[in-house]
Amino acid sequence: MTKSLTLGVDIGTGGCKATVIDMEGHVVATAYEEMKSDHSHRGWSEQDPSDWISAFTNTVKECLRSPGLDAKNIAGIGFSASTHNAVLLGEKGEVLRPCIMWNDQRAAPQASRLAERYGKRIFEIAMQMPSAGWAMPQLLWVKENDPDNFGKIRRLLSTKDYVRGHVTGDYVTDLVDAQGTLLFDARKREWSAELCGMIGLNPAFLPPVLPTLDIAGKVRKEVAEETGLIAGTPVIYGCSDTASEDYGAGGVEAGQLLIKVATAGNVTLILNEPQPHPKGFTYPHAVRGMWYLTSGTNACALSLRWLRDTMYALEKAQCEKDGTEVYEYMEAEAAQAPVGARGMIYHPYLLGERCPYYNAEARGDFFGIGMVHDRRHFARAVMEGVAFSLRDCFQVAQEVGGNANSIRLIGGGGKNKLWSQIICDVFGLAIARPEKDDSSFGNAMLAAVGVGLFENEVTAINQCNRVKMTFQPNMENHEKYCRLFEIYREITKVSIPIWSKLNKAVGE
Image 1 (cartoon, rainbow, N blue to C red):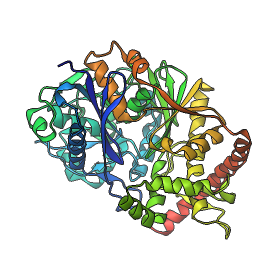
Image 2 (cartoon, one colour; image 1 turned 30 degrees about the vertical axis):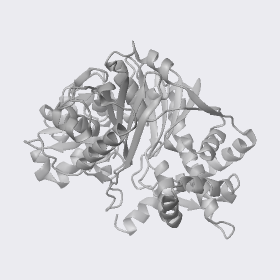
Image 3 (cartoon, rainbow, N blue to C red; image 1 turned 120 degrees about the vertical axis):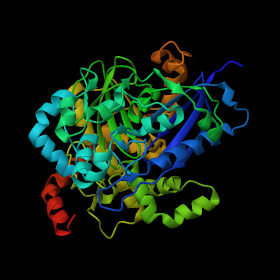
């Protein structure tokens, strides 16, 4: 039998998705399992790595139950996950503590101290400025607040590498996830003893770093028995979720801009060479020789999920009984509210904020609430507020690369037509939505390149990537949104000292 299928797996912050594709880019099978984060303390976000393994196993098993799908026809597997997350392992490979996730804000004081003392040098070596979401300050937090476990660290892996290591038995990472630790010398492409020394971490505990498309190993017999995969199936090293989803969406040329509406929101500019910006994140791309600059907001689709759980709990339960989608119900309600939600403005700072404020004390809000407002306006205000936050991020890309030559909208939120149009109108630019854009799809294509089913990354994109829909901006709405965006930013500016006072007042 000719092996003409590949499997991509993405362990996202909100859930794990597995996708099997053929060599035309058609999805043969897909499965998703939602995962929970622990937010028991304000600003904290932790996950249990064992949940990742369980979700991986369940989603792969579900894919392989698809009629006509034979695991023997899967030629290779690719993995990705959110980056910055450090899984701390002990002497015997045991997990020492829950994983502090990229959207956790507890390490803000450590990040501030690192920036004050070493900021210029960190930026020179790692191409990034320290903030609460990076592994480096989070590890410093562990050292200062959980010293027993810090002292037991013998290995450190990212989320993707932990799950892939379970599958193949390897202990390595790739260039993209290495960059996401803030401990990697991006130009020399090696771990930096100097950066590790700033937090007292032995660099010997960090894994070897290898290219995304190289073969990491093969599916172990035990994993094959658990999932239904074939023992010996090749597995590539993989990369971060942003790199794989940008690739899967067709981001292979310099000047392309990709706007992501997922748990977090990203605005990413594809580059021929690194152009570090202190308010952005600079990474090597999954496409060999390419780079990308990304800026992000913490609570993008997470904001709509929060609204679902707080204001639409009854509808969610009913939709689950009926087999319908509660987000479609929410979209229909939001569509009934006018542009601007009758003067209600939402700031999506539920977990502090990254670009361009980098303020762990930031708080979300609904500004301008009046008697004229009902739930429909709240739904629309959330969509508009997230779009404003994405536009706030866009200024970093503009400062580095000027105008984008094309824009693609990716992520689960991009499937919401109203939200897509709102983003289009806020930016005032035409936007294309690819037919497939999630990380698991990109991983499957990267696996196909890695095992030799395609000559290179661009050949795979040309064969498998298709645009599903385009959106044209309503310029009248754009003008309204421009005025509201300035108010959005003005509210943020005056709120900064108030956030600090509020957090001190409540002891957080």
